[in-house]
Amino acid sequence: MHKILEARFLAENIKLFRIEAPRIARKRKAGQFVIVRLDEHGERIPLTIADSDTGAGTITIIVQGVGKTTKALNMKERGDSIMDVVGPLGMPSHIDKFGNVVCIGGGVGTAIALPTATALKKAENYVITINGARSKNLVILENEMKAVSDESYVTTDDGSYGFHGFVTQKLQQLIDNGKKIDFVLAIGPIPMMKAVADVTRAYKIKTVVSLNPIMVDGTGMCGGCRVIVDGVSKFACVDGPEFDAHVVDFKNLADRNKMYTKNERVSLKHFEHNCRLDKKINEIKTMND
Image (cartoon, helix red, strand yellow):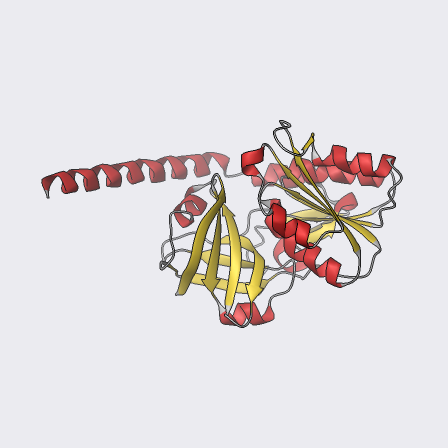
């Protein structure tokens, strides 16, 4: 069991957890992830390690409540426990002194981009960060991204905060203004990562994305996280999760991620129904007491 030492919402449906996991904290590197299972009947879900503290023996994960398991996880609070936290898994980010780098995070993807941006800054790169969200209330880790940046920008789709537009528009603006860019990291929704790759391809800027396919065991045994990269099947859990954005088959990735959409909706509906039922039962008990 892994005790939760801190639990707090960063934005709507996006929650930060600091968890006891000393062995993982000692070994983890930027870009790696863990497989989490809440209880013996729970599904396994991959979550990127946003930070770690070797002295305290903790890791930090940031969770967006979308499906049944992530919503159930986000109901946990400080003092609760998680049954299984396995890792660190996946290949670490390739860190080098590239020169001028742009690290782009879309939504909760910012939590995944942050540790790599931190490592790139320590490698003496000039780091530009672009933190994108649909609206101001969904912007996360703004100060943390600024702390590791030489230049930092926030974009919102609706213009409620920062630059009004998409992360790709801010990236294109930097290029149009003559900013020399040697490396781009983009992490977020599949359409966003594809759009970034489309922008940088024309300028032959090395671009890396972190892929988020369906994943089960995280060891390459199940084959569930197959992705097509440069026409070849790869396993995101052991060959990635980071790949050259210009040779990723994003359509295949999007199609595979939709395979269980119907099942996920049914599972979430049952979960939310049971939650409402439990709440009603507790209300009745309280009234009777």
